[in-house]
Image 1 (cartoon, rainbow, N blue to C red):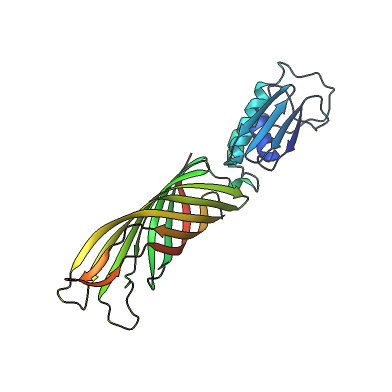
Image 2: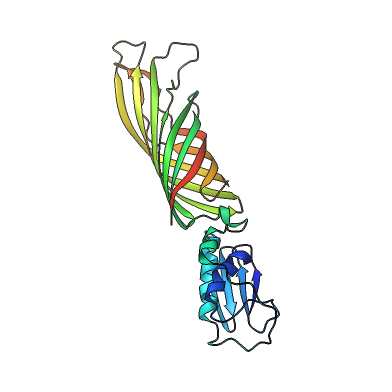
Length: 288
């Protein structure tokens, strides 16, 4: 029986390793054999054919080892009951023992294949600026993502440095504003080799801390400000479990809080838009 591959995922080495123990009297020879199994890589799917049987399997995550296992089982189930008679020829190498196959490494494409379902942690640092408010802040935070194929559900939280929106530079600040941004995001990613491109969008919630300074009877207050957050995602995969991320971010808060000195002097209001960028490390802690 011959084996013909038009694929990089799975590799020939992986398919041979999984198929050899299932051949039931057949032996793998060259592609000129009377019976030939074909495995074709179609990108987000792959085709397995043998004899008159053929199957296309969708696999957007490109799990090369799992592809090899599915292809091997499909080929084995569709083999004729008994192998055709063949003339004696040179002996073929014995099948690789199971314990040795378990130690083999996948092909060069396999180390970067990701599991179809996974839980990931995303520590990050960020910098943001508010339109028209004349302020910028830096921060650090942590995200946790549940990935289902090309979709992700992410919870993110961060702490940022204090700002003084709508106040003149060089003057003593009359109040300070500190934000703790939170968000729940639904994301999507498409992948090209080591690069991943995607987007995330979802509700945001800023916990705002106001701290009065050089004003009569300064006060402190906490407020919650709901809004919307959008992340663009550029991801570079180092391994199947580790990636670096660059995330341009825009946050929108339709509600604003005003800051006053009683009874009527208006000092400032909270910004409506925040623009920023975040750098993150994405690490898979569970996959299946």
